[in-house]
Amino acid sequence: MLPAREPTAGVPLVTSTKIIPFPVQPRRQLPAESAEMAVALPVRPRTVTFLAPFTLPGMDKPHKPGTFELRETRRSLDVSWDAYQISLSIMLVDGGTTEALDVSLSDLDQALAGDRAKG
Picture 1 (cartoon, one colour):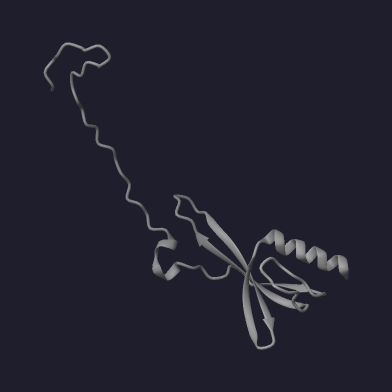
Picture 2: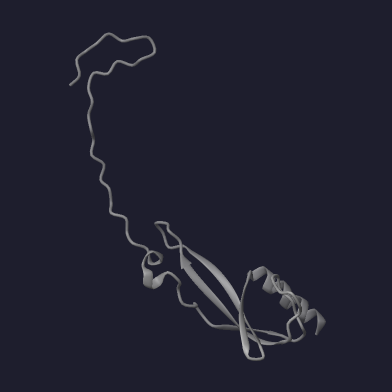
């Protein structure tokens, strides 16, 4: 206990100090924090089919039509509840090469809608 003193203008009088312990829960390790799970596996394989040549943001020129694999990957966010960042990649096959192009769902939907309008 602190000794009593006269209050000073604007300064509160302190008569005692009490430390209250606060229970701290250990922080649980999220899947994204472990080295083995830094990148999750694709959630489900899907395909998309373009009937006409198409372009997506990030492409220099139109790509030939065809059926392409779409990979969806979930990464855990570092929060105390289950939350994920979902990213999509379309696997563009051309001859003997395959290129993974990151694409947003809205850009993909817009390209597919434009493809259907042409056909």
